[in-house]
Length: 82
Image 1 (cartoon, helix red, strand yellow):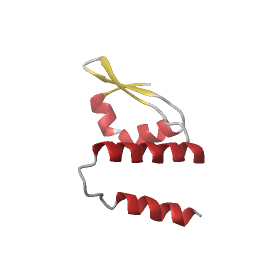
Image 2 (tube, helix red, strand yellow):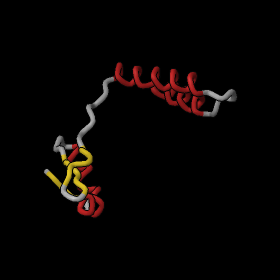
Image 3 (cartoon, one colour):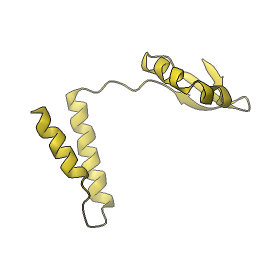
């Protein structure tokens, strides 16, 4: 499906629902394709671990010293699952 940016803004919720069901939408600006709205693959538990590892690596790389409470939140969520 192809939609203009103006149409996309007006119907974004519906487009997101369609993407979640597997349909892709190309968004155009002045008739030229500029973006694509598509579904994201469902992550398995191993994919979730990969995401968490990548998040830790990024935090370590860009940390400016004091750690925020994000790690505490991740730990709490992890404890709730077990």
